[in-house]
Image (tube, rainbow, N blue to C red; front, side):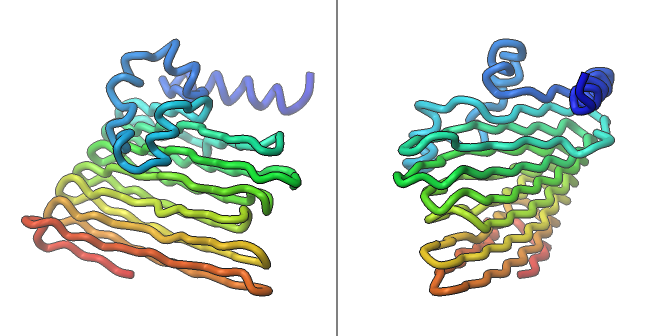
Length: 252
């Protein structure tokens, strides 16, 4: 037996003992339909934008995570996505739910070999952090130089929840990615770090958004971009404060 298999089985048993569900989204539809029905499409609807509509119509794969109330996952959960063919589209759907008082870290990586024809990556990621929950989402994007990376990623943070987002973009031909956190209830917090590196022939169109929907919410946005050899970066950031969301704090 390979060492990796030993580690995988050990981690799987540990997660199951805690009641944590970590599987691909297709499996979740079959084995946990009540959770999928409750949360799928509630953060990002098919009408959100054209790429979300495309994903909602043809999605396959992606990660599904559910952490029960009060459970703190003792290790980072990790997933890796890869495009293995030219002229291909990838449309994974990731759904992460941290129930009340839960705590987890999720790390996502992606890459692809270089082909002569372009490929499309149009993922949708939905994150729900319930009351007093903590979610740390880390993604490292290193697609090859023939991939159009056009994704929609968003989190809802409820009362006193804390969402941390680290978004690193180094690969792809074109990336359009603006992870956002909606601060839904009093005391919700977000902290987002966005880093982009654009080399020759690349355009990194990135940024992040914080939407304050309730009083006493706070957000931190930090963004850094580097251009090399004629590469281009575009930053699109937004802090929105809705009517009635008083006593908010935001740092950009």
